[in-house]
Image (cartoon, rainbow, N blue to C red; front, side, top):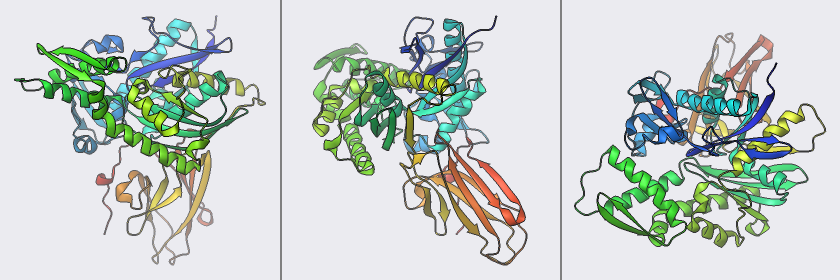
Length: 500
């Protein structure tokens, strides 16, 4: 007897992972084998065993070097960036020949992609055991401000575990879908998504089954992890006659800081005990620690509103997403800016997963019913372009362009008998490529030697519904065509040196 099939939504979060499914026309969060509705995004490497989730969390303070958390923050970044940001991490990290980050563990070196695959394998096993069904498709949510490389790593990691990815869905858009379908909210919506590791803001227009993203902005390195780090350092500074900090001690401090942060969402003052010392922290002190970060989120909202050509007074609802939005200072800051009480009709921790499940169900049924009335119009979060002479960034596809989309540009040879040239693709908003992310550099070779300007190369930039880029190179006269994949190699500007 063949097993039935199931489509699911996956919120692969920095701090926690959640899954959802639509049953009897209602979306529900899938509980794990431990009957909890989410599990920590933590992996522990042992000699003969890989532990994930709640089991792995037990080792976070006793074996920090082999217990990897917040892996989303390491997707698509270079070792140089980690060193530059001076991240206080207990891991030894190097790079392989593809410039992928490698975590050194007792069992050997493992890549970011390998770690993500273990999470997807774990998710797959939980769902198929619990439901006794085969997963036929998944919608995976990603931060709206993830770049092309980061999205590709997520997609390829899922596919390596034999999960068919129906769609990569931006997290704020998923939240809007949950509200639009479950709570029937319409109008101009601002989604404020402050999670464990990333911040996103999206401005959407929802009307009669149409979800139109007008603009998005964000920061992939801003979230609850930063608040924990600041709070941990604050606690350490309050201890007199303290011993020197090490990785194990700081990990313990981070765990205490996270608990303290949660308590401070309900109490004005909290006392904790650490190293046999009593330390008190108040909401006022905590607010002061995170004030700069919250002010940055408000600045990013202003940019998104400007890009969407929407006045702050035109916003009908503000949807809160992510565990960090439970912090009173965050909610008060949003209320002060919009003069609107933020929406928490759906649990901010669950709302993204619920939207992903609803969209997975829609995509599954849309194959059978072409008259389905839901239309999702998402956008490119970051501009994509090419390098011109002088290191100038020529934007081929500007941020907040509706996807899927396509554009093209004609290049030509500028020297007599030239048989090739380079095209370098970047992602970013700066005028100069040195301040943008290098996605790919490639050479067009073996062109017939002709006079300058005689060969015209058509370069097509094509973005699909997941926001992933394909580049097509064509020269019809000489019957030349090449498809360029923007793969998961971690190119960064320092690795690429432009010839002067």
